[in-house]
Image (cartoon, rainbow, N blue to C red; front, side):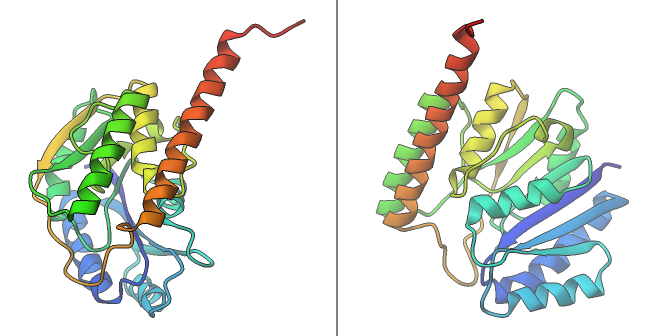
Length: 242
């Protein structure tokens, strides 16, 4: 059985956290004898940080990492990546956008030594007009600029081998972290298996991503990453003066 880290970021997820964690424990106990669950508390202010600590006290497999203040989704994922200790690193969101039992199926694909990542793509989704437009522009830019050719770039259902993850340079603070992860994977020629999943709409709370401000921040980070990649390429091509 694989050694597995599952992590999920949270910000004010008081109603979602306990059912999410209890189900995660049930799923991982069925698929792995050596696993950990990381809850990344991104500065929650509704008491969910304290609840996460209670869950960690009750279950030795659960660990909580608290951010001092709200650092953003990208930093939350980077914290999860940096603190994962097992061979396979998996992440999703605290509101369970895809049935956690699908990770069991995803892990069977990771048994193939030729597969470096498994990513989910939504068979169904419910987007408002504004979010639909943002998504089309965003996905088009990431595919065009970085050679990312997958069906669903930003869905938070991904698995990656930790040895491969260590090679990737991630710096995004926004939801572009998913696109940056895949852009880095494409740059390093990681082999990706795409897995269809049924999207489950949020049961509690509201999304923090559907705003003009969040969209502008994301596009700024895409531009910054593109410039960084261009600079790195130029430095490799231009010979240094002796």
